[in-house]
Amino acid sequence: MFTLAGGAVIYPQAEALDTIRSYALDTRSLAPGTRFPDAFATHKVPAYAYRTYDCVPASPGPLFSDLDLLITAGLNARLDVPAIAALRNFADRAANYLDAAHNQQPDFLLLNRPELGDDPPQGSAGWHLREAWRQGMATPGLDIARVHKALHHKRPRLVPLLDKKTVEPIATAARAARCTLWQLIYDEIHAHAEDFTVLADEFDKIAAREQGVPLSRLRLYDILLWMAMTRPQ
Image (tube, rainbow, N blue to C red; front, side, top):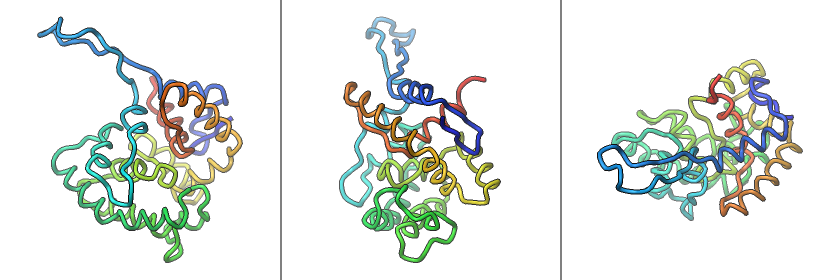
């Protein structure tokens, strides 16, 4: 059983796997518009962002490529010229901090919990990670969604994923628990460590069959919460 965002969302194990499978594999129909109805046959295209975001590899090395930034649009980030310019500027400033964090500890779940607080120890992996995040959050024109989507895609095991749909329940639960948003995510994944291991292992099998990619526990957490927050009531 998964209890996420302080109990805002609860999943039995089987339902959690079905939800991740749906996110990765569901499709919608794409038909030609009425002006050119015979231009092409109706196609199936992804319903969600697994193929357009998770399955697009990040660039090698510490620097962000243009694709690393544009790929945030594949996860519903709205991008125009000012947003792309802001992302480019932020990424150039954040890259070395993110790389330093990754070199010290590439796995968010293996960080020490105080490193995910508001005042992480100077020079720690968590300090460098927070500095990478801070460079984005200090940049006019960016927001919590664009910053996390860019950083997570570059380092999916190190950076949590938050957007406008998921931040509210996480923030509410974090306030109640008197911790940061990242600490809440860390605590809840650790609290359900065995469940997340089973979920990750089962999805790995699906991904292998479908020529996809595995998903980090951070991404699994995000998908479960996002799907619950966006499904019709």
